[in-house]
Image: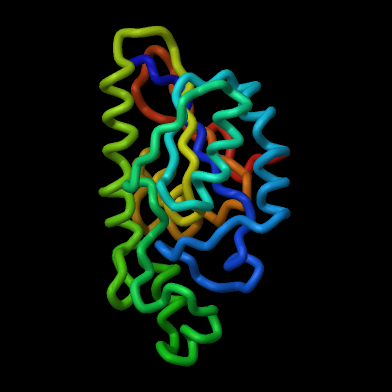
Length: 205
């Protein structure tokens, strides 16, 4: 075990964030502020001296990650398994739109990681598809020096992946809050114990 630190960074502000619309797999682009946020956080991430950089292939994550790549000098790898939760029929809608068409469904979705929006995926399914990214990196880096890996992804995926890697019971998942644009979560582990520990959440410059 040589991957000692995992940094999960959310992308910068997008047009859909500003409009209050659910994104999911919709490829909403960064706003000017979102690009400024990414540029501002890049030197801090570079200061963590990461060894690998992987991003979701959605443009809001890629555009954020490219600025991290420039600051760190690391090549950027894209992985579609790091995409945000697919929200099915909810994608592009506001919370008010969803509440009007599916009364009570938003509250149900937020409270139950096993429940999926119509035509979408649950948080458990998101973790099942994204967790192998971490496991494969862990296997690839085994036997080498201690390393730090940065994943650039999305708020819902990051919250779910943190819960999954910490082996939290699903009943506790709704207690883990959201993460701001260009904020990050850090997981770390000791040399003598393979279990991930939460070292920081919703951290930012």
